[in-house]
Length: 402
Ligand code: FEO
Image (cartoon, rainbow, N blue to C red; front, side):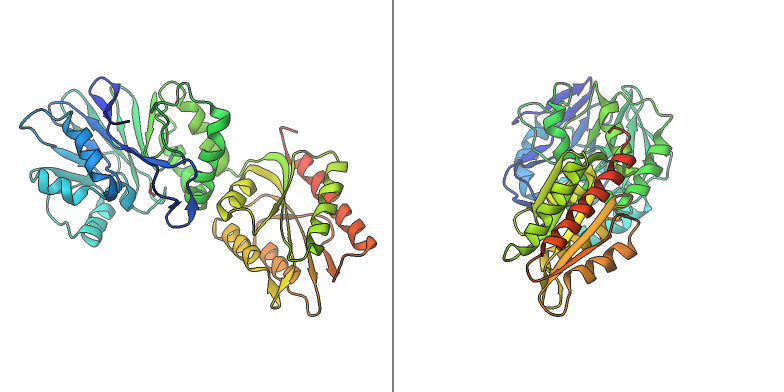
């Protein structure tokens, strides 16, 4: 990926692959890397759409200079999103091309000053404004909170290209081909969903608003800031984002549990037995100490059923379970069929905290929550099987694909 890649006439990908960052936003693992996509429109006036993380400046500039006509710099830099994984090259570009106009909305302007001390060379646009580059015309659509307040999308009408910012993006570096045309979608979808659930999902209502705003726009190509460029199958990624932001889910159950000495794990296994016997598949057992928070959130987003179980720890839920519950709450995930269980030694803790979480969210609580003291008795385990069966029945009822 050392050269620019032509997408259409007068449009090129000039982004970079990042195989070095282990944890995105210092939180979310990147086992398959990530790409920072930037796009160059070559026309009477040249325009760059977004930039890359500052640590990849060298390879980004090398790619850019391969396309800029000798002696001619950049006329416009369109900033769809100010998060530093996309704005990291702005100051350098301004040094290199001092006449360049930075195009963003009023909120972008405030962030340009706050992050980079930039007050000059800023062209502020409003929703629906246009900018002609010569043969190509750009229209700007403000899509706040997808993923920051200043986020906007840029549409090029001649080739019907939507530069969508973080929306329609995914984790995973580009593997030898920037296009989603021949992508193994079954392999890619979990990484796209993990990105959605971890990064964008909290703002699902704003994703829905953005989709409504764009619904009459003919879109042939989706060019996001992360992941593949969708040229012939743009509708696939748009429909995935639509479903995820409406909290649609597949039939299936994730049992996330915390257990130190195996007693709570035995309860989790009994829940799994009950749900399988009720006819639900797949059923997944995930120990919260051995599964990343990122993966757990993505699985909760993917599947209709969710059971949380925790041992007590210092009178509270186990720390990683506490973190998971808080993050599910923070991400505003909703409309799941939820079951709860816990164990304790003397004063309780695990289940009590989970019940607080469940009471505050928009969940469909299923069956009877189970609390066991010490090692679960036979009747406790039977109650766990019943809980699994109750969640499974509700999950099957709530899943259109089942
Ligand atoms: Fe990829 Fe919200 O930045």
